[in-house]
Length: 61
Ligand SMILES: [Zn+2]
Image (cartoon, rainbow, N blue to C red; front, side):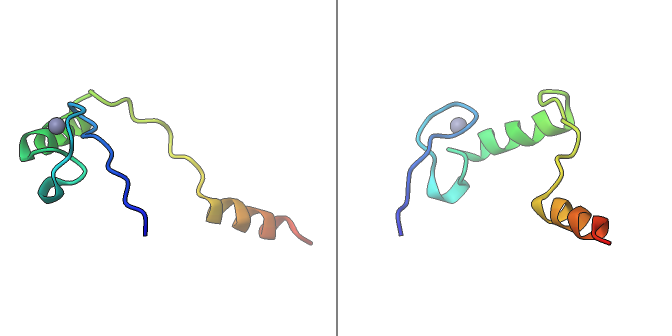
């Protein structure tokens, strides 16, 4: 099992195990705030592989 340490997505500091994937609860809160605010542009929902597979099945005659 390879464990790759990625940095905190908010501040790019090494993440802490306790607050993975963030380095601290502060960054975790900041991430949440961004979701509820407009820090992140919410893209249209991408089709999941399952949906694509289902669509293919539906198309079969
Ligand atoms: Zn951080």
